[in-house]
Every structure is written in C-alpha cells, then in structure tokens.
Length: 179
Figure: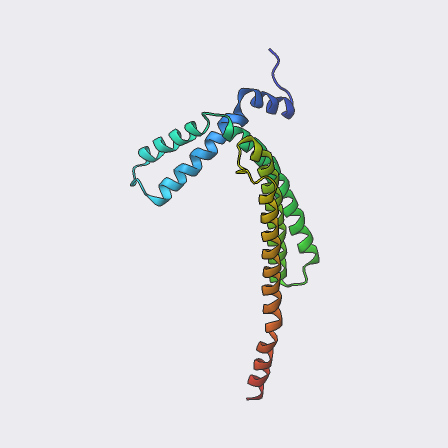
C-alpha cells in the first residue's frame, strides 16, 4: 500500500475519510456547546452532563448533511474575508497618520463590508435550496441593501458630526488658558 507523501495527498485522504465533513464540524459544535454550558452553568457544575449534552448536540447536528455543507461553504469565504482584513490592517499600518479612531473605523468598515458580501453570497446560495426567501424573492435583498446604505450614511453623519463638534472643546481649552 502506498502511503501519502505530500500535503496534498494527506489532505485528500482526510477529505475521503470525512475529517472535514464530519470530524471537524463535530469538534467545533461540541467545543462551542460545551463552552457555553460550562461558562453559563445552566445545568450546574457537572462536566459529565455538560459533555454528554455537547456530544449529543454535535452528533445530532451532523445527522443530515446541512451543517457539513454549510461549513464547507462558509469557511472558505471566511478565510478570504480574513485575508482581506489582514491586507487592510497592513495598509492601515503603512498609511496610519497616528489617528486610532480613523484606523478603527476603517477596519470596522472593511470588516462590515466583507461580512455583508459573505452573508449575501451564502444567503443567495441557500435561499432557494431551503426556501428562505419567504416568497419575497429579490425584494428582500433590495430592502436590506437600502437599509445598509441608510445605516452607513447615518453612521458617517454621526462620526463626522462628532469631529466637527470637537471644535467647541478646543475653545473651552483656550478659555481655561486665559484664567
């Protein structure tokens, strides 16, 4: 029997064994459920009960291929989003003029846009498959995008309003210097 030699062959054999479709999603769901149960102490401090429930939820979630398919679709896009954020952070570091608020808002804006694009791609893919459109079709997306644009305009207005309102603070500091 020939053993895998390169990383490609190893990853392909893991894929054929179901590591990516079943094992990793199970471990992720188990860890999240166990962590929530452990941190919230809803069921007490008995870790055996918490682990049993986490195993049951993890296995039940893999009963149908919905979770495996969803994870297979979302995590490549999430990886692309993370790499876009990394490039944005590097560019902000190069172009940063010392203003932390501008950098934070820029990172938040890029992250929000990336999240919305990933959400749009996943929603459009699963909308027809699981009848999530509710009969509204494309109208729902138009409403969502209009709300996003309105929210962005409001956020920009608030942020720029605070910056221009800061001029009053400088005049009060000048009056303090005169006293």
